[in-house]
Length: 76
Length: 507
Image (cartoon, rainbow over all chains, first blue to last red; front, top):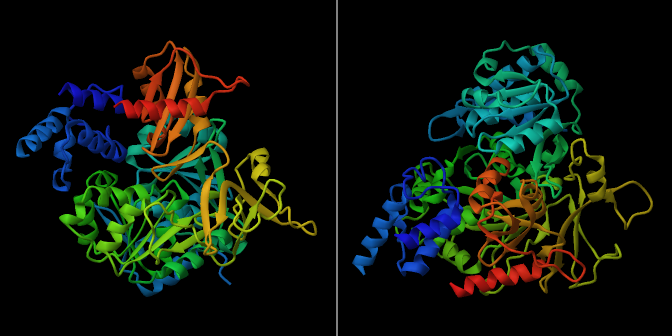
């Protein structure tokens, strides 16, 4: 989780990612961020997020995104 | 001879009044209503005495906004689109430049506009479309209107920190729409999905062919460009067959392997531009849509939309760049070397544009206009302007024009044109900042900002978000003890670029 928060803070140092759960709804993340996130997650955690998991629910909070990463790691 | 863009609408409304012209996820507007409401808005502006002046359209992105554009033109004025997602400081700069007397708002932006120091009268869209139609006045306005009168002003990034307002007239837009439609093969059956914001000239590609042919344009919700499968599903749901998008919107779909799950069923014409299309991604698109036509487009706002096109037909190697091809009919490209002579075959030169597509320069800014709209140096016999793009290009062995690089610090990021200098100017204005330097890492597509000063990254980011559009906010920020300088005492951009590349490797 720490690692993920670091990646997120690199993108927006002014956002509190530990508590925010409206990253998509409040337009905090944009398409460039999503693209960056997915590629950084891929290189940091060695998991590829499949297209069907690239949906708003999985990106609305750091927690949800972390849950997705853990799920994908388990599946491997 | 057609003199006015609205003649498109007037011919089409006779044919297909009930067909949907513009729609978003919430509602659609038919041509009959576009026509009627635009004329009511024009009449309303006339009744208030607004004529031959800039009228700001400050509305969220929706079909009504487009109707407001046409309404402004019916009233004999020119529209200046602003958007509710623009940062407040930028809007302030633009309003200060324009000093508009009228601003058209929707319910949301009406509340936002109160924070600005403007004497302009605020007009509500929903009220304006109830105004009575002043038939006679609209006719007089039309008779007086020339095809060299402006239609719109759109603002682009300026290196001094002040955005530049590019003024375009009917004749340039008509010329562009005719040539573009011819090349891309638009028709009444065309169904567009618009991606670009309405406050740039990029949206001309959809807005005007729609009224010319009686086609339909869907405005794609911005959030869908983060979610590839939903985006393709949107295209299928609305039977979209034509898209003119920035490259990053297309590669987002292919790179995330959305095509494994869902494929665009109706898409047959794909135009892209403003950025290099990585061949690997392009091949994925072509494989999924082997029958579709693909076009690379190139052009600066100053020459009205796009100036060059290239139908991508032959095979490309992974390290090749898709050319920008050749100019549209009635436009000429001159490649000029540093001596202002035509560059020799295969040599790099500055891309300069000649033709009706040239806009009228920057609003209330003679100085910056005259720097780039200049007498054709190859012609000493009569007045003839060319536009110097600042882009460097050359012809490849097939005789196709290829974009090489920029002359200065302007970049293209996510399809947006950005002056790195504008970011630096804004950073430097923050108290506590000693110096700053912005570079662009092409490889990762990141805007990188280095700064020296007593300011945290957090403070800097939230400050910048108030002043700059989202796409201009640096993607990576680092505080330095000292700025590297060249032997001449200038910011050492080369060292900083290398520094960023090295830091990526360490990871």
